[in-house]
Image (cartoon, rainbow, N blue to C red; front, side):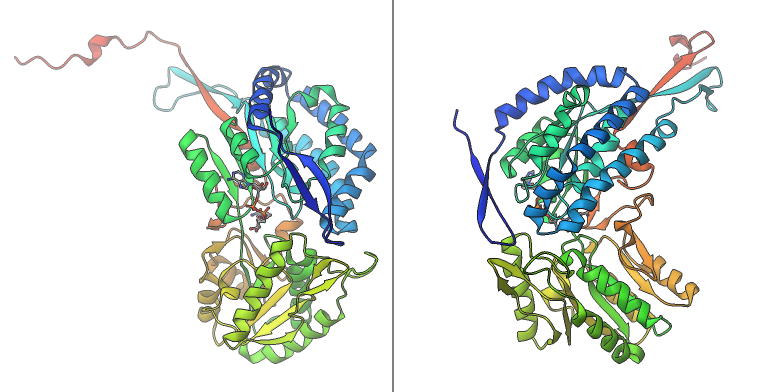
Length: 478
Ligand code: NAD
């Protein structure tokens, strides 16, 4: 059988310096068969056992921390965040292990209100195979965010991380193989679209994190197959800065919310609307902070802005900026994709004189770009913030908390941070749904995150004589 070899690029050097074999559809079919058998035992073993196994895996990941973090660092060009990705896995495991016993507790039988002679209880029945497909911007965190609750629910997990950042798979798989009971129910496959399509074919529910374009295909394949899909997609998050904002605080938070991770985060702030009365002061504060930020070139030490991970993204960002400039936009700082040492970089970019006819204000940029528009009243600000096909999240800055909350409640977005930016990146325990094209399906955050993986089976027990057929005899005419 022919094998498909794939390659990965180092975003710092620009070199294609890693090769791996894509998992074939037939190999996925074999894996899925094994997993179905193993999942039944995993579920029957009970939650306490599953917690014990996940805790063993936590220790195993800690033993492999250096190799996993190093592999992530090569693929993403980020040292600190790669270490945080690995460290945070232990926190995620602990958090779900402490919450799962309450969330998956068997219900006490209760009597039906409609037919009191019938008692009702529920079994929670996990999906046998949860498929997880993840993107390149946080390769480990976004692979695990659905995987851990799914495993605790009693499901098995078939995971396919992005082919753009594949190096961490090897050490991660080693950490899994050190825990044989886990290795039977957590399988990782490598590859791109073809592997993803085969994975969906063999899954009973699918969790997808990625672009709207691919999410649409995944959702359609899942619908054809009649399985649920949870789609966490792109965004174009707005920030509103009112005239009552602490402008220093707003500039600090907005810079971080737009520029950290080089803007390669779904919840990055990509549109900034400022009250015209305070726009000059805000812009000057933001510009000073933006110009103080440094690239992490050449050593990777110091600096805050790393290389663009995915090569085609550099061109997409440049195209958006150039088109906006051709339409009359004006750069305040940054704005040129720079090439250093084989990698593509973009310094924090502030751009004004923008409007909603520009792709820069309509399409996801996924780079450290802060386009700024002014508004004259709050209705206009809310209208502008909501004038988007996306609805992932947003931010509001105002010292008047009544005003801030009123604006937040009017925003068509699944989460709104008040007086900070992108809080959902740090706060995973607030349930949220993505609005509009940013996604579909139950919340992955908060308690609901684990409940997505179980179906409720109602057990209805009758305590009196069953109703006989004769009770439904048509009335005979006299
Ligand atoms: P992508 O859609 O290109 O790829 C995501 C994954 O889908 C990859 O693993 C890829 O191999 C796989 N894939 C590609 N075609 C497929 C197909 N036909 N069937 C099944 N799988 C397929 O996304 P990306 O470029 O890796 O990631 C960036 C995008 O992810 C951005 O739009 C970003 O906003 C989004 N994102 C969203 C969230 C969120 O929580 N909402 C978080 C992070 C990233």
